[in-house]
Amino acid sequence: MKIYSALNYGSSSLKIAIFAVNKSNYELINKKNITSFDNIENAIEENINLFIDNKVDVFVHRVVHGLDYKNPFLINDETIKTLEYLAKINPLHNELALKGIRKLRSIFNEKLHYAVFDTYFHNSIPSYAKVYGISLDFFRSGVKRYGFHGISYSYIVRKMKEILNKEKVDLIVLHLGAGCSICAIKENKSIETSMGFSPLEGLIMQKRSGDMDIGVVLHLIQNGFKPFDFYSKCGFTAMANVKNFIELEEKYKAGNDDAVLTMNAFVHRLVKYIGSYYVLLENLDGIVFTGGIGENSWLLRNLVCEKLKKIGIELNEEKNKNNELLISTSKSKINVFVIKTEEEEEMVRITAQQ
Image (cartoon, rainbow, N blue to C red; front, top):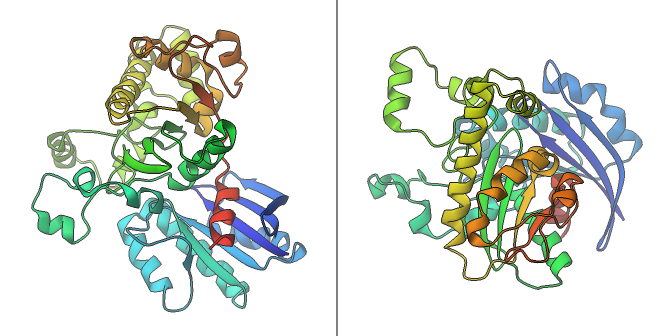
């Protein structure tokens, strides 16, 4: 038996989960969510006994952007240079993870450390869906669509295989949280996803705009917008002047004009992507909502699925409001599921099963 610790770094948060792993058995023995901190090094230092008391053997670090690198990625004095390079590509997420990795390696240098990348799951996307409409020299040098939330999608695929008792599944999965993305999955593999070279592309998110005309980007920069502002001063919080999705829902229900427009735009973007992914899949085993918003907002699921009646989707109102596993009716042509994602467990599984 080995003890694994998964460290899931957000842009300003840290989830720590510790598992006892014995062959195919994964037992969660401790978990802690740190929602805010001054700096990651102090947060780790304050919780150092969590690792010591549980006698952790292996540390597994979530690293959002991994280019085309495979999972799991062994971290040592040489390969950490790769992580330093990746931090320059995606500073919002990767820089925080790099600081956490350095801190833990300085304390537990004799232990094994691995990175698990959010991008790896999407390596199966065909080149024609990754390339941008610019010189192919850029594509060959790595400027292409990578996709993110891959750890979450990997978990959902595994759970849906269990639920449906199938070896291969075709799914449309919506991971909706502070970051939002959608993925078309054919025979367990990603074939298309909404995020691209960075986690800025695609759906409207909490603080990111998603798809936006490059002309608008240039216009904003010319008028004082800084590069990091695209990660922090956009999205539905900026559109409706709210702190989070819960407040957006409250204002929407109250009929606030900005909140109604924002919610309608958020839903429209989701429906547009679902429709485009629907035609990519010959057989669809289900649509899955996951992530903090996807798992908990019955209102959003209802608004989205109301727009999908044309493809035969019908929700069970009571099951949807109760956040049950299967929320569609028996008459629905496509099953709709709500599944709580477990990224930390999936990180450990990916590493332990190498």
